Image (cartoon, rainbow, N blue to C red; front, side, top):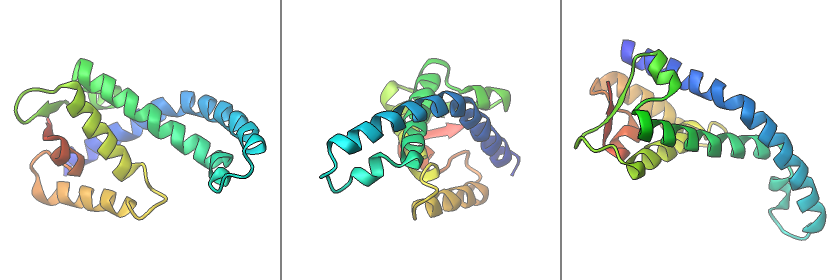
Length: 148
Protein backbone atom coordinates (compact mmCIF):
# COMPACT_ATOMS: atom_id res chain seq x y z
CA UNK A 1 0.00 0.00 0.00
CA UNK A 2 2.81 2.42 0.88
CA UNK A 3 4.51 1.72 -2.46
CA UNK A 4 1.31 2.54 -4.37
CA UNK A 5 0.93 5.85 -2.51
CA UNK A 6 4.54 6.78 -3.25
CA UNK A 7 4.05 5.88 -6.93
CA UNK A 8 0.92 8.04 -7.16
CA UNK A 9 2.66 10.98 -5.43
CA UNK A 10 5.67 10.64 -7.74
CA UNK A 11 3.37 10.69 -10.76
CA UNK A 12 1.60 13.82 -9.48
CA UNK A 13 4.94 15.58 -8.90
CA UNK A 14 6.16 14.66 -12.39
CA UNK A 15 2.95 15.92 -14.00
CA UNK A 16 3.19 19.22 -12.10
CA UNK A 17 6.76 19.63 -13.37
CA UNK A 18 5.57 19.08 -16.94
CA UNK A 19 2.44 21.26 -16.61
CA UNK A 20 4.21 24.64 -16.88
CA UNK A 21 6.06 24.11 -20.18
CA UNK A 22 3.00 22.25 -21.44
CA UNK A 23 0.77 25.23 -20.74
CA UNK A 24 3.08 27.48 -22.77
CA UNK A 25 3.34 24.93 -25.58
CA UNK A 26 -0.43 24.40 -25.50
CA UNK A 27 -1.06 28.12 -26.02
CA UNK A 28 1.33 28.17 -28.98
CA UNK A 29 -0.20 25.04 -30.48
CA UNK A 30 -3.67 26.46 -30.06
CA UNK A 31 -2.62 29.58 -31.98
CA UNK A 32 -1.25 27.44 -34.80
CA UNK A 33 -4.30 25.21 -34.72
CA UNK A 34 -6.67 28.16 -35.23
CA UNK A 35 -4.67 29.12 -38.31
CA UNK A 36 -4.71 25.48 -39.45
CA UNK A 37 -8.49 25.35 -38.99
CA UNK A 38 -8.97 28.45 -41.13
CA UNK A 39 -6.72 27.13 -43.90
CA UNK A 40 -8.02 23.55 -43.84
CA UNK A 41 -11.66 24.09 -42.84
CA UNK A 42 -12.78 21.21 -45.08
CA UNK A 43 -11.05 18.44 -43.10
CA UNK A 44 -13.52 16.34 -41.06
CA UNK A 45 -11.33 16.18 -37.92
CA UNK A 46 -10.33 19.81 -37.89
CA UNK A 47 -12.62 20.62 -34.91
CA UNK A 48 -10.36 18.51 -32.72
CA UNK A 49 -7.17 20.31 -33.72
CA UNK A 50 -8.43 23.79 -32.85
CA UNK A 51 -9.94 22.80 -29.51
CA UNK A 52 -7.78 24.21 -26.67
CA UNK A 53 -8.35 21.08 -24.59
CA UNK A 54 -6.79 18.87 -27.27
CA UNK A 55 -3.90 21.28 -27.78
CA UNK A 56 -3.10 21.16 -24.05
CA UNK A 57 -3.79 17.45 -23.50
CA UNK A 58 -1.86 16.39 -26.59
CA UNK A 59 1.18 18.49 -25.78
CA UNK A 60 1.07 17.35 -22.12
CA UNK A 61 1.09 13.70 -23.17
CA UNK A 62 3.91 14.14 -25.67
CA UNK A 63 6.07 16.15 -23.26
CA UNK A 64 5.40 13.71 -20.42
CA UNK A 65 6.41 10.72 -22.54
CA UNK A 66 9.61 12.51 -23.59
CA UNK A 67 10.38 13.64 -20.01
CA UNK A 68 9.82 10.22 -18.46
CA UNK A 69 11.59 8.30 -21.25
CA UNK A 70 14.71 10.48 -21.10
CA UNK A 71 14.73 10.54 -17.28
CA UNK A 72 14.36 6.79 -16.95
CA UNK A 73 16.94 6.10 -19.63
CA UNK A 74 19.54 8.44 -18.15
CA UNK A 75 18.87 8.11 -14.39
CA UNK A 76 16.47 5.14 -13.97
CA UNK A 77 14.16 7.56 -12.16
CA UNK A 78 12.29 10.83 -12.61
CA UNK A 79 12.32 13.85 -10.30
CA UNK A 80 9.05 12.72 -8.72
CA UNK A 81 10.28 9.15 -8.29
CA UNK A 82 13.58 10.43 -6.87
CA UNK A 83 11.72 12.52 -4.27
CA UNK A 84 9.70 9.42 -3.34
CA UNK A 85 12.83 7.20 -3.30
CA UNK A 86 11.68 5.06 -6.22
CA UNK A 87 13.66 3.59 -9.08
CA UNK A 88 12.61 1.72 -12.23
CA UNK A 89 14.42 -1.52 -12.94
CA UNK A 90 14.14 -3.87 -15.89
CA UNK A 91 13.39 -7.48 -15.04
CA UNK A 92 16.30 -8.65 -17.20
CA UNK A 93 18.56 -5.89 -15.86
CA UNK A 94 18.73 -3.89 -19.11
CA UNK A 95 16.75 -0.65 -19.02
CA UNK A 96 17.32 0.49 -22.59
CA UNK A 97 15.75 3.41 -24.44
CA UNK A 98 13.04 1.34 -26.14
CA UNK A 99 11.96 -0.17 -22.84
CA UNK A 100 11.74 3.30 -21.29
CA UNK A 101 9.76 4.60 -24.28
CA UNK A 102 7.38 1.62 -24.21
CA UNK A 103 6.80 1.97 -20.46
CA UNK A 104 6.21 5.72 -20.66
CA UNK A 105 3.89 5.47 -23.66
CA UNK A 106 1.75 2.68 -22.22
CA UNK A 107 1.59 4.54 -18.89
CA UNK A 108 0.46 7.75 -20.58
CA UNK A 109 -2.10 5.88 -22.69
CA UNK A 110 -3.56 4.29 -19.57
CA UNK A 111 -3.39 7.16 -17.09
CA UNK A 112 -3.30 10.15 -19.42
CA UNK A 113 -6.48 9.11 -21.18
CA UNK A 114 -8.70 10.21 -18.30
CA UNK A 115 -11.38 11.45 -20.68
CA UNK A 116 -11.81 8.08 -22.36
CA UNK A 117 -12.75 4.50 -21.45
CA UNK A 118 -9.02 3.73 -21.19
CA UNK A 119 -9.08 5.54 -17.84
CA UNK A 120 -10.73 2.43 -16.43
CA UNK A 121 -7.48 0.61 -17.21
CA UNK A 122 -5.71 3.10 -14.96
CA UNK A 123 -8.01 2.29 -12.08
CA UNK A 124 -7.63 -1.44 -12.73
CA UNK A 125 -3.86 -0.97 -12.89
CA UNK A 126 -3.83 0.65 -9.45
CA UNK A 127 -6.07 -2.09 -8.03
CA UNK A 128 -3.80 -4.74 -9.57
CA UNK A 129 -0.76 -3.07 -8.01
CA UNK A 130 -2.45 -3.10 -4.60
CA UNK A 131 -3.51 -6.74 -4.85
CA UNK A 132 -0.47 -8.27 -6.58
CA UNK A 133 2.15 -6.44 -4.51
CA UNK A 134 4.89 -7.38 -6.98
CA UNK A 135 6.23 -3.86 -7.65
CA UNK A 136 4.55 -3.68 -11.04
CA UNK A 137 1.60 -2.04 -12.71
CA UNK A 138 0.14 -2.65 -16.20
CA UNK A 139 2.72 -0.40 -17.87
CA UNK A 140 5.48 -2.17 -15.94
CA UNK A 141 4.19 -5.53 -17.18
CA UNK A 142 4.16 -4.27 -20.79
CA UNK A 143 7.75 -3.00 -20.49
CA UNK A 144 8.96 -5.82 -18.20
CA UNK A 145 10.01 -3.40 -15.47
CA UNK A 146 9.51 -3.08 -11.72
CA UNK A 147 9.50 -0.15 -9.30
CA UNK A 148 11.75 -0.35 -6.22
